[in-house]
Image 1 (cartoon, helix red, strand yellow):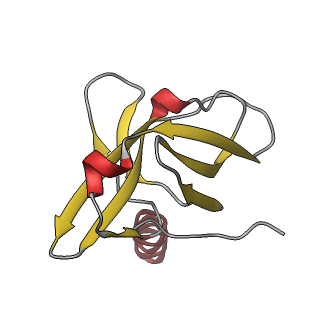
Image 2 (cartoon, one colour):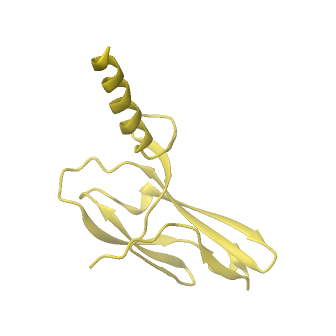
Length: 118
């Protein structure tokens, strides 16, 4: 009985710490709000630094924009897992977007969590 209770507690603890993602089609598809190390919106692209394992590319990300009043909330989602085995490292990418078309003159607000790299 103790073994069963301990096993259930461990399973509950592990699943509670697992990040929630939306699964897409195909074995490598998913959608997760990406933690950024650095973000710099430009006129024709957004420069982001993310954690990669060697295979992360621009195609692995999707930009979503929500405009409300004078604010433009930008969210950057990872939609493809990086299965390479390199030690995790910061990778800087330029994600294409048109700032004027997406946000106009509204204030840009990034919704992603930020984790600074030392």
